[in-house]
Structure formats: C-alpha cells, structure tokens
Image (cartoon, rainbow, N blue to C red; front, top):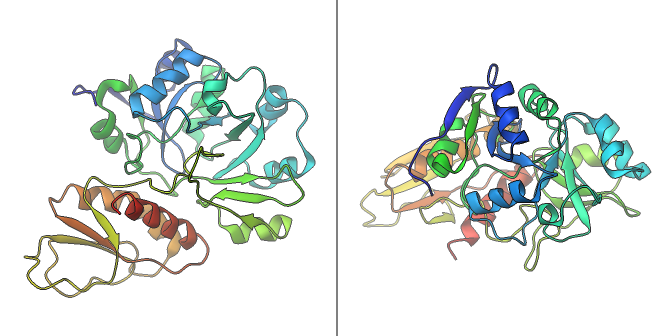
Amino acid sequence: MSSGSPRVLPAASGIAEAAAVLRTGGLVAFPTETVYGLGANALDARAAARIFEAKARPSFDPLITHLADAADLPGLVGAVPPAVAALVDRFWPGPLTLIVDRPAAIPPIVTSGLPTMAVRVPDEPSARALIAAAGVPVAAPSANRFGQLSPTRAEHVVAGLGDAVEVVLDGGPTRCGIESTIVDARGERPVVLRLGALPVEALVEAVGPVDVRPGSSGQPVAPGTLAAHYAPRTPLRLGAAEPAPGDGGRRGFLAFRERPAGAWAAVEVLSPEGDLTAAAARLFDALHRLDAAGVTEIVVEPVPEVGVGRAINDRLRRAAATWH
C-alpha cells in the first residue's frame, strides 16, 4: 500500500478531471450506490492491470464493467439475450450486475480470461456522469485492498489505497452499502452468483424462480464470490453477545438491533429499528470503525435471513471464513 494520498475531489465538481485521468490510463475511485469502485478504462489492458496491482487482487478474480446507460450495452456486446434484456429493463440503473458473453473489445484481463463479462449500470448520478464523460466503459471492483472491507466512504478509500489511485471522487456515504447482486440470466433459469443489494425476492417477483449458487472454491465465475472475502484486519467471528470470562473487555461487537450487555470495548448497532436496508447501508462503515478501535476480536451477530439480510449474512460469513 502506498503511503501518500490521492487527490480527493468533490463528486459534484470533479467529473471532468477524473474522466481525463481515466482516458489517459489512470485509476479513479468513485462512489456508486453500492460501494466505492476503483475504476480504469475497461478497453485498456494496461489500465486494467493497474487495478489488480493497486488492490493486490489475484488475476483470476474478474472485474465488473460499468456503463453510463443501459442503451450502451448492445453497442458493446451485440445482441442481448431476451432474459438479460428483461432484467436490464427492470433493474438498470441499479445494484444488479449481469453476466454476458465477453465482447472482443474488452481485453481478457478484465474478465480474468473467462469467456463471459460482468456488467452493470450504477444508480448513482455522479458515477454515470463520470463514465459518460470518460467516453469508455469503466472496469471497477471495490476500491479497497483485495479481501479487505469494502469502502463506503471516500476516507475508506484513502486509508486503504493511498496514492495507488490518482483521484478519489467524494460523494459521501454510499446508499446501499453492500455490493451489487450478480445474476447469470443466459440460461433457462436465472442464477444468482453473488447475493447483494438487490434482494432475491425482487428478482423472483420480476422473472419468476431463480437458482442461488453463491460462492467459489476454485476460479471465480463472477467477481466477489470467493469463500473468504470482505474481511477486516481484526479477527472476526459469528457469535452471540456473551463476552467470555476474563476477556478484559477488549473485544468489539456488531449488533443488529440492540446494544449487548457486558464488557465490550466497542459496539456498533446496525439498525435499532430492525430495518435491513439501513443495516446493509451501515455494515461496512460499522466494521471499518470496529477494525480501527484497537479491539482483539470482532464478534458479529447475524441478521434475519430475508431480503437484503441474506446478502449481509453472506458478507459476514465470508469475512469470518478469512479467520478460520
């Protein structure tokens, strides 16, 4: 990680400068409605390689390509399968990433050599304005070191990547707080490859039954699907609010609704109202604070396994798997 600092520009006024950086092969971190992305020109193999270098990301983990508008998809990939087009019409712009065949214009490094490409249109005006101003599709995984907590604020990006990125557009905290849902709809039935900010229930309502197959033990078929991922630097485990005797009150706790009793050194509550959407928006921000609190361990309480709660628990399980 670099020790310097990137240029941090307001998202409202830094679009032109950031777009120029993208066009010349540089890296720009920018807000989406999910998390902050680390963007490079998706048509430029050398620029895409810089993403892997900056994140220390393994070359076998593919990137998501971002477009400014759904109307740009046919021009990039050609004919769009009807089931994919239906999801585009229903959910773009938004936190849904779709799997399509990789077009010749996208270099293989972006897709980690896979014959498919992950693509979406973000539901964040400054992100779409940046992509449109750059005039190229933008490859952008989350703007953090590989395997660590995703960034939901510009300061998370600066702390994690330093001057490995030229420009950070600061658009404040992200709205959804967790990554996009990834779906492969090219077959007979859509397959959810990564749980995310778009609940499975919304997909079922729109298109009928779907299969859910998140996770990967080999080469990922979609970004962000490794079994161990999204982890803080502090050891993390799933558990209940029961501090062990003699722990010295040096542990942190991530609660869903209620602050736990006992000697916890630091506590974060995701949503006192029990709102899963609000809990998702706060998830990574809360984990960043606990990670910086100097605790010896972070204990996290799972949330209800419904709606976006399934994606929250997915992130928590992957984070815990890093430490086991």
